[in-house]
Length: 545
Image (tube, rainbow, N blue to C red; front, side):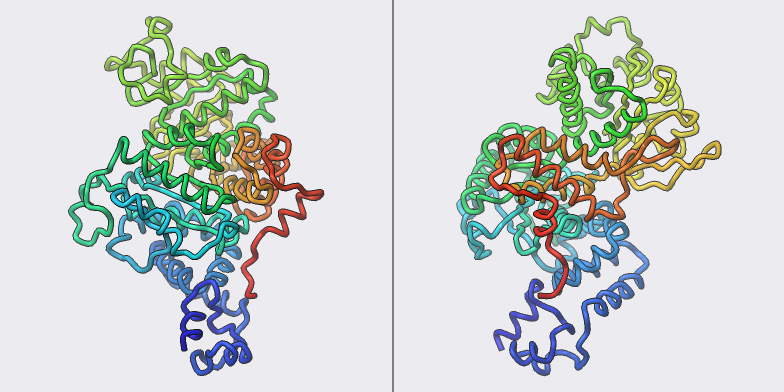
């Protein structure tokens, strides 16, 4: 009886109606399933019909979540067969809606929960999984302070880690039996949650400072000791912590922050494509970042590094980057600037004669004065790139690269359907949301989505197959170049970034490039005579064993 129950309730071993008669007898399942013995193809067809019967994406999310909890092979078969359609359901944007209701609609835990009030339980929490030192390839952790574009959701943010792992598996074939989702429950500043009787997390304000840092440090020490081969992925940490944790620990651990490094790398992919069109080098670029949080400045860091690789000194590269935040152009007379902005602060006397509105230098004035070749939007300020801004951008340079990557749709700085005609088709665009082509003057402008899913799954697979000890800047650059290599942007209206339709093949290409770069950077602990074959052999396939 126990064997029957374990086999049917373990989603990693459950085949549902695909158990053969011989398997049913051997495993003690006689009489526990309908008479029909189905193939995985038949099960997947039925599951897709069931999914398609739901009208709302949140209903589809719940159906897929329940399938995930019952039969992982079938769940991932459905995802891989319909990946472009499923991505917005299992992750952004639908996961955001599910997170808001997570405690109220609690169904099953798929994560390890680490409580800031009980740091002594960290090791014991992982020991409950029964996994050995060589059994884990990837751990995704979040403290859920800055979920997508919806803010602080405490323990409700668990599904951000679960969803990220699902994309890793569906897109890059990371074995779902060798991954762990982690939620760091450090409290929440979301008063609606704190006053919600159904909320399942710690009912106190977010812990910060020394106790928070101790939890992070103990987490990193414990997982790197217990699972020394695992890539430690950080997701949706708040701006005051994300970059700081990365900088403090990236030399010591195999750590990766998708919001800082992944977002930067996918933007770099768009820039590689854009510069093929403009026939320029990074050393010739001038960047304005509108929305200078950790994501925006993290991208600025990678662009600055590319400028330096192209021959500029560190100081020369910094002078080509301008940050704008809620207080306007970032200058050295501003108080309490976060540490991540200080690298790019402009001398106040340099811009003393510039026009100010409400005491600050606004975007339009910066565009007119600086004449940037690249305008990056990470502000979540919908409509900030007005017609005036776009026209001023095009007055400054012939083919500016325009990257409004804020998401979801209600937070994007400008829609391509506006920017293309305002610029007379001049801007080279990638955005942070899926959008249809824009017809203008007889040309269909394909607008690529700067979707991190094009990059981080392949990056993670490359780290795993190479056994890389660290994620280097060179590996991030190699991943970006591999993404850019999959499109030809030269034709008028062509996309700068490939679509997600063939994500597994795309991820394999990225993984090969990353593994080779890990060897070149001296951080690989594994070697291969044929990285293409090694990557293919490493990709888990959703088939019954």
